[in-house]
Image: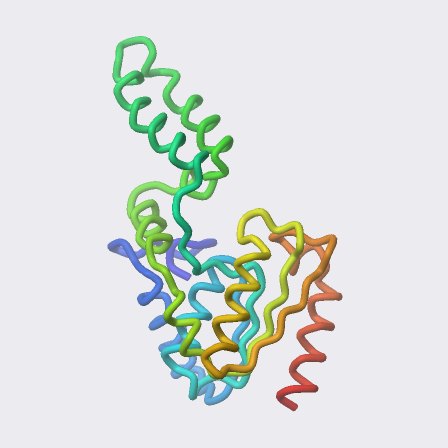
Length: 209
């Protein structure tokens, strides 16, 4: 994906739509007619929107720790925004400005906004564009058989998000199942790869064999 790993950054800020079209283009190049799409975290955003837009391309959809439901800012986030804005003024002063990066790092870490802190330039604008999009309406369009695998200890995309996604897919007539792993967090696929693979394999064989 542009902007991730060793890939070059996009020339301008991308939204979820751009990444969806990239996946579509890749699937066309590889001549994939029916495939299983697995999305984790930000990849979950792409998978949700892809499934809503190109259902004919998918055999099954698997979401784990997927983002996509937009929430109102928490009290902590509101305080973070105020402090971040005030900090720009404070750290513009001589001598104090050399402490700006260290203070920013502490503030972003406290607010659990590490991903935003780590980005810069076009990828920071991409990050803001992506998290501003609410994919609730896309969830209601998913008809592809879906499996949601979630860590109960996930603090990045809470279990309540998983339950909401599962309900929205089902309420629109889709087929969705939610599997919760009690001891896992947001990194579930990396914490328990064998367990994750087993659950996905059983889902594929049973429901889409």
